[in-house]
Image 1 (tube, rainbow, N blue to C red):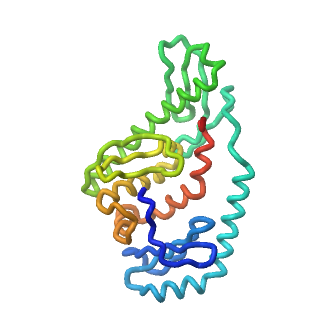
Image 2: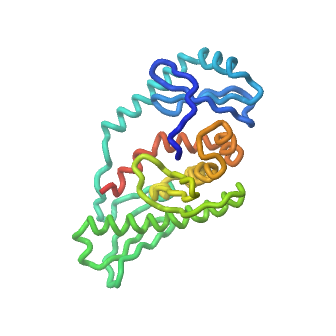
Image 3: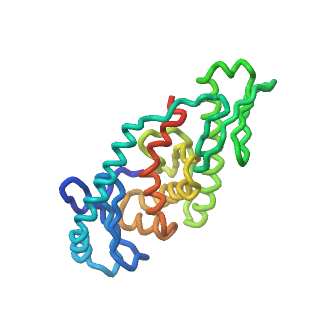
Length: 252
């Protein structure tokens, strides 16, 4: 993702990003983090009217920001989740569905992960059971392959719908970005997106493919994202609210 944002206003301790919408029929204020607010402006409404509306909602905005800060503090206090126990009691949020992780000692030449509706079954040689680091590496690589499969399918579907080409995907473990699009068209995505709801994964793919048309975060870019996925703000908000927790898994 290009780091540039259109920051038109600054109200004390939070920034406001304006977004012109071709679909919205009314002005909308969205508090997306403890320091950022999105002001959605219908194309037929003037900026001044929208800014006046925002000022009229100042108390509500500050209340929502206070709630965000409280949530952030709670998350920071909770800290990372415990390491995987590898005893059959672990759960991973595969595609946002809590899924049991089973480790099965088997006489196999190479470890393999079987993904089923209710469980992730990791088959490995018996000597692997006493090496959690090896088990984590195997699981991480298996999930990376699963993310690649999902990403390639989504990118082919959405690129055809948008009428653009791309290179990749490159699947990595970015710490600060869920995806990026290089000027060459190479799209990189975090393997941890396979842990999110499928529509959130689709949003990130659409976001990056829209950069094949606008390599920035201009009004035209966000209008294109909205055209391709009218409810994208809901999925973007999910990442802001829950994304950090996904880095608690397999983070060595």
